[in-house]
Image (tube, rainbow, N blue to C red; front, side, top):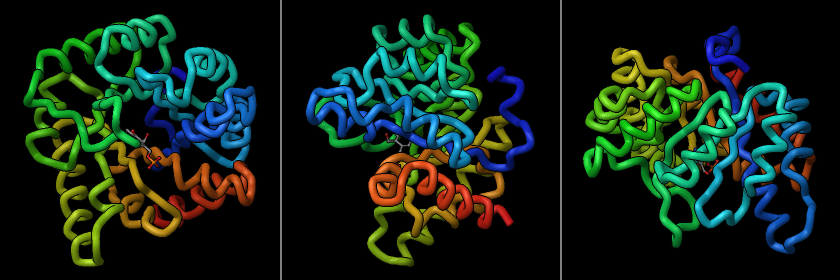
Length: 251
Ligand code: PXP
């Protein structure tokens, strides 16, 4: 998919993260379940994009998966990666339509927190420049903080993905409302700075709608919840149910 078609008619894209299909495969070191087949079924269920995270430790998605997905996916591939030489060089070679830079720690269960743009802004800006020079629309996964939004614009990113983990893990409704307000403020600030607005992490069938309703939000990245439901009802139906919730929330 060409970068120019990112703002096509779909109001808010649902990108399905299929990492955990590969997690089940890697648990036995066999060749099933196959993330490529899962991606095809996700697209049949209405996914608008397929997201995979090529982790440094290759705990789930493997290089070969990305190569096969790039040749199979009919929507577009959003490649999540750390700002590290090895994976940056692969992304430059593969040229997925979109990349999302994420922080990565070996010992974490999943991505914890957004990128720290204040620690080494030049390193992130250089990674963004490399990816965008290769024709890859580049997004930065950040916490919903004003400084992180401003830092993303300064780094030259095309978009941000707002980390929804604090919202998803909120202890009660008041805390969830407070986190939602932070997401809304960050989304408005990002749009005013000319950045595309994506969101994801920890979103489920129960909590997705208030985030999907954020007017500026043009893309949601959802993995664990959809893959979990797909074990019970099948991938196509699991994606269809999520996409209906997103559509309903957009009014
Ligand atoms: N967005 C980013 C940047 C992520 O790293 C992840 C988790 O890999 C997700 C979205 C999806 O999170 P979840 O699996 O909780 O839906």
